[in-house]
View 1 (tube, rainbow, N blue to C red):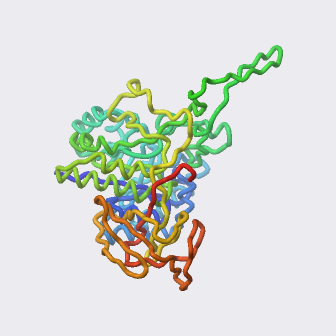
View 2: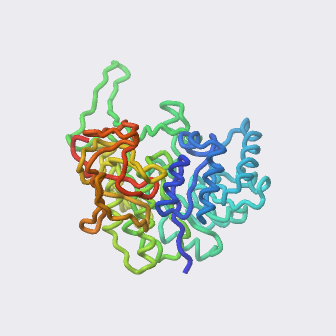
View 3: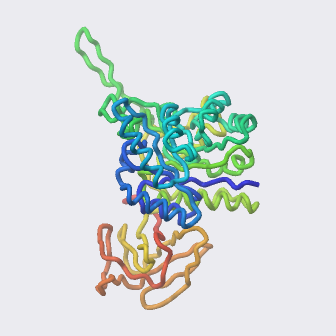
Length: 424
């Protein structure tokens, strides 16, 4: 049985390393405005992206380069240079969104595997076949597709790889084809600079053009004014039936602009779910414990399992974002010897350890602190907050850039967390 691939977002070099260390089989990211995430793309220089590819390949993992923007005529010459430059870095595939760019990549980088972006909105066998005939080796299907339709495409074109989103932000519009941000702020979503206008609260008014009278329409309490705010996708509990379908080659997590902790947790949770599925011990609650720790807009299983007209709970109407169950209190440096504080920490606070998948961490009890297991989870207590420079602190807060000494070595980018409270 061919194992499904876990594909994670990589918005920066640090996030790329975290995704791979925490369980991803492959990552995706890009450089420049030809990527559909300008904000994340700018955080990769060509040198960093090259380093990221080398980091992944040294660990047997893959990197897919996003060239999935929608270019104007004036940019085609620059696009050609970008494709050639990206090809020289030797990633494992290009992700593209339009037939023209697909052909251009095929001409300029004939040996590069080409993945068709979800922005192409493939929903059926006919479109899948056309793009496959044009050179696409994998199709990232529209988020509105059903598992039934995925199985039909795989049945008709078994050699074509299929990739589906299983976690992350959902778009109010059809597969990201939105102009709201363009109209209100001039930031073009399909050029990589969406301002997320659908996440804002809106007020509705009625106007009489003859008299100039304007009435505000009041909503009932609890109905909410976030009228276009989609919940976040979370298909972890359905992963067993997705993998059992035999139609899916890669499951994908959205979120190149999200936090390093988000990158780590989604990679770990879905990595555990995949491992457990193949080991015959799938436990939905275990993965949801991790995913619920993330900030989110409320979760939905969206449309892969259920059809759109069957769903009436896909929008968060009364809030834009809510806290997760936990707050990150610290993150371990690359050397594994110190942590940087991300939230108020006192001596002897109980910090839950969130380490890369299958990590081995020493159980210790010394003058710096202790590590111990409780109810199947690993925890850390720092008896004293000793800085790298030898200063002892009574407490440390987010923004304190002094690395705090750890009682033992932890894997790079291990996170520590505490339960979230209402005043966070």
